[in-house]
Image 1: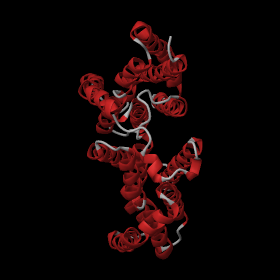
Image 2: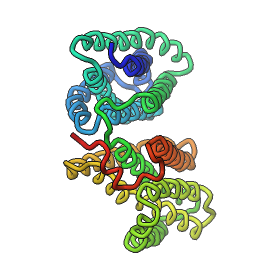
Image 3: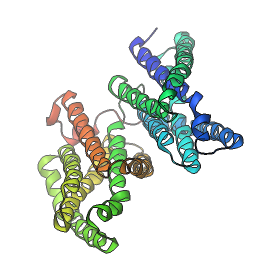
Image 4: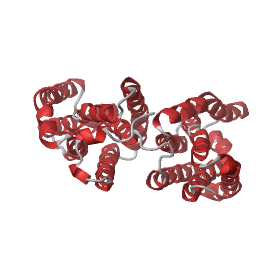
Length: 381
């Protein structure tokens, strides 16, 4: 069979995904009962999940044709992990419905994308066998999952959901590191940068009022003044300095620096001791964040010679996805410790920056590759 390595990785990916699904099956009803859900309300949790898959599976399949299989698969796995974690820590029935709906929405990206991936890497003779392998992977995961979920329920009915969330994140990491793009070179790095940068910044903005109130006793007026200084610095950088930095360092280097500066800003927020140091931390974080979007968009349009408007539109979709998921994750992390959302955002941005740096090092010419050479690489079909 063609591309045995890719099929083996995809087999393991779907096995782990369905293992996570199986783990939560025995616990959904019991966890909902702990929140005083009736039998009918519990049945709606199952219906909602399937309804979201019914509505959005075609959308994800179409999107994977446009942006590539791998980014859609990774986004689905990551979003599913967030939904599972939120279900596990939910404190009320409305939150259970929201988390379950999010899981259905995001997990529906996995199966059609995986099936399309198999179609990409197999010929007509071996395609049936490839599809059969995916079915076997899903079946095996669903066989072993409930037994594991039943055993984990002894530690509490929320634990299986957190375990399944961690498994989905591990699966996402496995696919990100080992699975190649079946449709050839794509604009995946730029879309992922758009998602994670916005994800991190939306997390900061959503819980920042609570953070300054709980830690410093500040209110809306204080926050307004801090954001005024941050916005002024961002405008000055974008209007007078960004073009010079790109001319001197190149777009990719500026974007990498922006990721690291943005991450540093999040850490400085945690270390701040008062109004001045907190404003300085926001200024650092904001400048790092805002140099990335125009730089990222510029690189994306150079890589995509045709359909530039569509490419920017897709980037905006990833940007919006980050704005949707970022506040949800930040809110769930803030409760245990107000520092956690900022630590998580800094870690995410540092990881993205490291991944981009390693990816650039693997290309012919490494860091010496210029922006025009990037634009001559494989373009969108």
